[in-house]
Structures are given as structure tokens and as C-alpha cells.
Length: 283
Image 1 (spheres, rainbow, N blue to C red):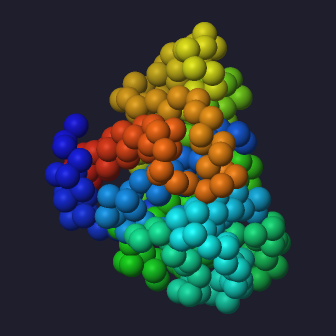
Image 2: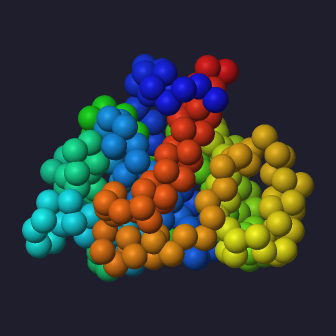
């Protein structure tokens, strides 16, 4: 790997990139990885936007709590959500600053109406699938990296997120259903690439342990290598860490040893994330 400082310099030379973090299985670590990668990127001076495309809005809750935890104040009200931006055909005034270099396009339960909205208002399938891409393209140049967090099962959201992206990162918790969900997600990715001739690639598969040192975890990791080719698997593995659960409740902080342990691990993830991106852009 390149040294982190050199990696950051090289990455900033690359045009802004959109990365969806996905898996068709719920509970695969998608939101945790989206939020933590976004947070660490921002602390390295990389201007990052997290787009919450999940109506459960867990990324929104986590990052708004992070804003409060790092500004010693109450969580501010969100005046405009993702669905409102879609209805008004603009994302320009949606981003909320969380900490320096990290912004959020927030979601809410009203985003459940996204499939209904596109079918009622857009008759052309191409325009339905490219709706989010068009809106993101208007603000893409304001950021170095845009990360999209998606729900586990929504064809309409999945298609819009993938088509808007330059890369997809698969979040894989070491469970059988998560592996099956990852395989299904890659099939959908390949299908959309062929259908629309997308300039899109798999950034990699990031493994999140269900149980540290578990036999099932190792079995799933071995199967993942068989299914996806070892070169596609991140060398960095995210272990089970209790502090990640607290971050969901209290927001991300970097104050004590437990916080720093998590941040250090995700810094390793981000180092590989950046190096993979640089390598793929250089091909």
C-alpha cells in the first residue's frame, strides 16, 4: 500500500467518485461501513458526502447524532429530506454539514414512496432508472467522494444507486445469507452494466465478522474467495466491536481508547479503499 499521505494526494487528483455500499441482505454492515468510511475520509481532509437512500434512515440518525456529539449541542431539525429533493428535482440545498469535510443528504420514512413516485410521474424506464444520477451529477463536483447507503431489498432504489455510481463496494457480514445477498447484488450489478453499458466497477468486498475467530466466519470468508476471486476481497477485515453499537446510539466520537480502536481499524479500511480506487483509476 502507498503511505496514507501520498494516497490522499493521489486520490485528490481523481475526479469526484460516487460509491454505493450494498448487499441484498439486511444486517450486512452496509450503513455502519458507509458512515464510518465517510467519517474517516473526512478526517483525512477528503470532502465527503453520504447519501442516505434507506427509508429506515439509520445513516441519517447516526450522522446527526455525530454532529451533535462533536458540536456539544442538540441534534438540529432537518428541514428537507431526500424525497423532498426528488420531488423538487434538485439536491442542491439538501446536504447538511456533520463535521468539517463531511456532509449528509438525509432520508426519512417518506422515502418509502420513491417507487410509487417514479412509476406515477415517469413513464420512460430509462428516466426512472437514471433519476438519482441526474440529480447527483449536479452536485458531484462539490465533493471528492460521495457514498450512497441503500436498503437491502428495493429494485428501484438499487437500480438508481448503482447507475449513479462509479463503483460499488459490497459489505459482507460473515453469514451464509449475507454471502447469498452479495452474490445476488453482483448479478444485478452485471445485469445493469450490460443493459445500460455502464462505466462501473466493483471496488471490492469488505468483510465484517459476525463473530471474532468463529469457524463459520472463516468458512464464509473462504467461500467468498471462491465466489468473487480473492483479488476482489479487501485485505482488511472489520472485527466485531461493541463500540460500533454505541456509535449508533450516541454518534461517532474519537475520545477514548475504545473510540480510537474503531477509528484505527476504519483508517486501515479507508487506506485500502483509497489505494484500490487509485489503482482502478490508473488501469
